[in-house]
Length: 363
Image (cartoon, rainbow, N blue to C red; front, side):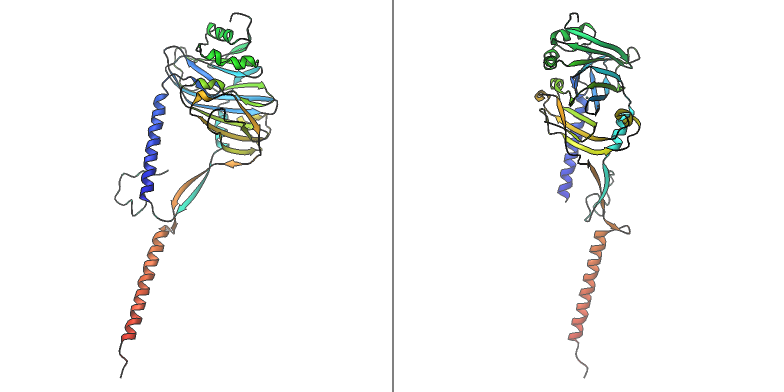
């Protein structure tokens, strides 16, 4: 039992070290985040601490709400997202993600164990180091619209040539790297459009830090698609977190070069409220929450296309292990103490009986 806890301690130490390493790596320039590519100004750095995406699809229209939490010294950053149809772009409601997190929260249960562990009495006696457990010029580019939305300068574009698209972006202050241009070719060939975004703080000269206002992008789509191809340009491991509100449970058709997507929640929302109701138009929906890791982003070979599957409900369960007790007394102590008492009584009884048999009969 002690060996098991030693292994657990080593695993936790290793995980803590890896987490610290990841935090350190976030100060490097961020290449990709979820379905787009985010690039800071030259000689500046931006880290994406967290990216959240929520998608609503009713069979005809898709709405993607994205929120980034960033840090670094960049005062501006550019980001581009391909979309299959013409998009409307507005600001989203920050409360949406908190509401989804609450709906999909894991169930918490207590789980008892019988024999004492390393942190339980009597093994913990005398130890004072314990701790409680517990994402241009030229006719080849068309400008559908351009507007300022909070900290975002948004341009909605069409393009028939990826080089012309790259030239337009550079000429209008969307500083994206040259190697992004060929990555746009599949979208140009399929006649997709683009939402190009410049992120700049509302306070002039201030760096981009903290949680940015969500951006809401809506477009017509006969299938639920989540663009991911540009994330193949990332130079470090990518994580996708995706919450989907649709008529049924939705799952990706393939892993598109990453690890198998994991469903962390699946359940019906019959009476949506607040920001969730605003996103679904008040209609009931099935909420599916997905997580996926991309250890080698260069292997991403497509966009996510999601399909309807059986509405099997699922919710994670988090267990809190507790020592089994009876009236506050550890069960193991009662059992062993009772067994010891019973053994003493049995030995005493046998001894008395044996002594009576050996005693001489009276004359």
